[in-house]
Image (cartoon, rainbow, N blue to C red; front, side, top):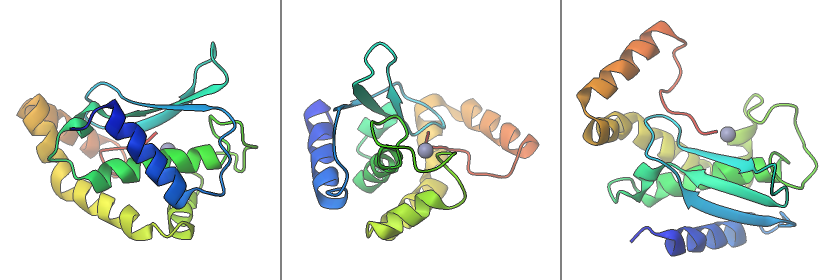
Length: 159
Ligand SMILES: [Zn+2]
């Protein structure tokens, strides 16, 4: 079952396995947020609690149809932000959190490029179906319209 215990176990395993060089000098919390069509995850520091970083993952990730690799890759994405000094006590390494190619490069350096590619592949093949199953077909049609009007980028994003 994907509950809070499961999430914290995933956080611990991922940090120990792939981010042992990154000091954790504040409290890091992880939680499922609301179910969302396009936002897969985020990392934030609450202004009222500056010593706490909160990683929030899309509530749809509770669903077993979303492979664990997709949940893990989203978590890795947020931990890369943490390592780069965004919403963490670490000194900020870049001006922008998604500056050209830094995310994929960070996955690669941590031996996780295949995870990066596998997540993208799964999202391309299955995310529309997940959204349709969870929100209904009109929600998917609205996504298509927005995609046609705006830039041709993936219809999901990871904050
Ligand atoms: Zn991001």
